[in-house]
Length: 191
Image (cartoon, rainbow, N blue to C red):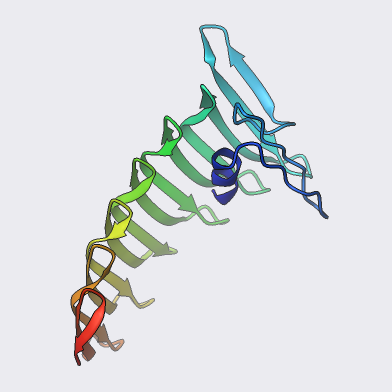
């Protein structure tokens, strides 16, 4: 996913070759040199592309319209499994994005609006919820929860406008509160 962001948000940048790296120069229209391209006769402003790694394996696929990424973009592991899927509208992340581990299990599920995290964000460890948070315009907002491997809560903290604000609690693996602090605008005010 970082490569996709890099390619399309830093137009006209080229990468230096190194062992195992492919040189990718990003032209103004947003499609890297060497990418497989597919033009559509009925939609000339839309171009599909595929990008392969140095070994010839599919590494990315997506669409560009009027020089900006649109639709679902996919990044792949060398074995062909999907690594991530990120939706774009007019060059900005928009909607539900997912990241998948190399075993094919969901690792992250997040919502974007206008290029920023916005809404529910969850991380998973195999089939167990690892962390859940909520974003508003790219900033943490509301309760953040972090869980132990056994599924019990490890930490619970309130956020407002991207900083800790309110009561934060830490728990032992049996679910007992071990530490409780209160924050105001990111500053600790009560232990």
